[in-house]
Image (cartoon, rainbow, N blue to C red):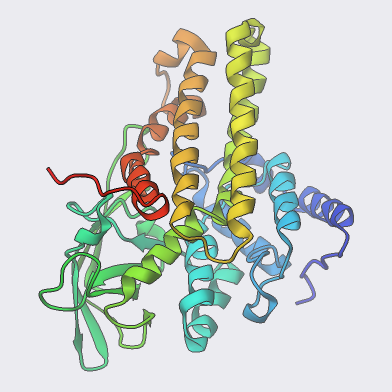
Length: 390
């Protein structure tokens, strides 16, 4: 524990500590990445970023906002924001375990057993175990309640059969949190269970899905008599829907702060490019850049509001609806700043701006489409009638 950074109480002192540590450690191969590895760019320098994750873990920077009793640092929201800001400025490598640190970890803290927390949280905090998400299926993307993957209890183990899709980084993950149907004949939200499943076993097959960006961080994942221990369910059997929704609420609340690290970096890059190539001289372009900056600040304040009252409820869909549309517009802004050169692909790899534009086409679809988010807000927050069935 000697390498763990001491966190001062004062925010400004904390900023100086974070800045100094990053300056001392974002060196060599870590500095050469220049912050790469974000959305649509996840395969770049992955082994280096895994090594970086362990450096962060040894210094106590993972789980910064987790409660201390669960191995975290108990840092305030303001300190988490400061860390995100300094991390961006230092151009530190993009993180490799968003699913573990920002989704599964807080979910276990909220809903898991003491034994599950003791087993899984340390591996996330040290940077040694990575997680992926087994929610979406070919016929259950935005309609998560239509899950068809099944799990049955066989003695002391769950046996899982089915297919998941769009499982980000499944090919390099050690574990997957899987929503499966465990009650025969159950429909929609009932009869679902939240399982923790090891990826390294004969019953799990991962097939990359090559995207138009050229990357393959998304995957199809097939479970054929895959197994996991009887006690590796979060919550009670058949009540996994509530846990799954709790996790999504966390994704649309607290983890948005971590996501904004990448967003800020992207916007800064585009703004600098507009200054250099003269695009910023155009009044309309300047207004679009200003609007994008304003939207990022609103995103941050909404995330803070979401974090102020424990686990967010259905109103957390505001966050997903807002950031996905904002990021899509940022991709379009990047192309417009570059101009016609953005339409040309030369060499072995696309530019980051081209990848950004192509990748953000999916932002308003994955994790629940914009239409689904509007329905949730209308029905569950505003109390409006349900959308008519076609």
